[in-house]
Image (cartoon, rainbow, N blue to C red; front, side, top):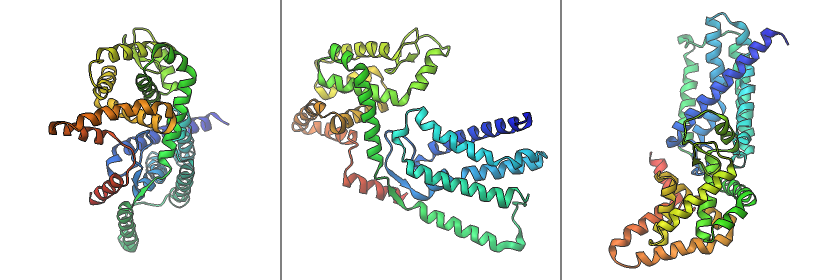
Amino acid sequence: MSIADLAIHASCIALALILFLIVNWIGRHAVSFGYSSTTLFEDPEESFALNFLVRTLPPAVFMILLSAAAVASSNDELRLQSYWIVVYYYIIRAAYFPIFGLQRLISWNRFIIHSGIGVLAAAAAFQYLILPKKSLLPNLETAGNELWLALLVFVYAVGNNVVISDSGGWGRRNSYVRNSYNTARTHYGKLIDEQISDDLLKLISYAIIVFENYCRPPVVRAIERIWPSKNGRTTGIMQVASNVPLSDEESVKLGLKILSKSWQDHAHKGKWDRIQSAVADYNKDDGYVYKVNEIMEMIANRVEPDFLPALETRWEQASDKIEGPAENRSLRIKLARLSRAYSPRRHSSRTRAKRLH
C-alpha cells in the first residue's frame, strides 16, 4: 500500500470517527422525540421511523455531502474512496460497545440488520450518485421525482407515530446488571463483607459500584489514572476524590468508609430517608440518587434475591409512614415516582402521551 493510499485510509478513518461522534450527538438530542439510545436506564418504547433512519442513513448522507465537497475541491481520490468511511464507521460503532463494556445492552441482531441496510444504502448512493458525478440539485423538468420525495416524507411521518416496545431491552439490562454485580462480588465481595454488616448498606454499595462502572468503564478509568489532572479528581471504580490516582480496590476501600460514616450519621432517620441521605452524601445529584435506587431494585429483584428482605424493609417502613396522617401522602407519591418497574398502566400511559406529542 502506497503512502497516498495510507493517507486516504487515515482520512477515511478520521472522517468515520467524526461521523460517529455526530450521529451520537444527534441521538442524544433526539431522545425526547422517540430515539432509543444505548443506556442502562433506557425507556424500551421507541419511534420506529426515527430510529431506523438515524441508524441507517447517516453514512450515505455523509458520503454524498463529502462527495460534493470533494468535487468542489477537485479531490477525486477521496471521492472515489469515500465508501471506506462507511466500512470504518460501522467497525468503530461495533467496537465501541465492547470497549466500553456495553455489549450486554445491545440487541446485536438489530445492530446487524441496521448496519446491513446502512451499508446497502451507502453502496447505492456510491454507485448511482457519487461515481457518475450526478448533480443533486432539483430539476423542474423532473418534478415527478419530487412527488416521490414528498410521498417518502409522508411515509416517514406516519411511521414515526408507530411506537414499538423493545421486549428484549429489560432482559439486556438485567444481564448487564447481573454481570456487573457478579464481577463486583468476585473482586470486592470479601472486602465489602469485612467492612459492612448491614445488608441494606451492602446493597447500596453494590448498586453504586455497578452504576459507577457503567458511567466510567475500565478503559476510561485506565485513562483517568494516567492522564494528568487536577488534585481531587475522582478515580477508581467507586469514583472517590483523591489527590493521587486510585486503583479500583483502593477506591472501594475509601468508598465503603465514606458510605459507612454517612450510614452512621443518618442512623436516627427512618430507613427510606437514611438510604436517600447516604446516597446523596456520596453524590448530591438528584439523578444519581434516583438511578442508584433503581439499580438496587434490579439487583434485589432480578439478580441477588438474598438482598430482597433488606430491600423490602425499606418499603415496609415507608408503608407504615404513609398509613398515618394525610400529610404523609406526598411520600407515597415520591415512592411511586421512584419505582421504574414495568407496569401495564405506566406503559399504556406513556404510549398515549408519546402519541399525543
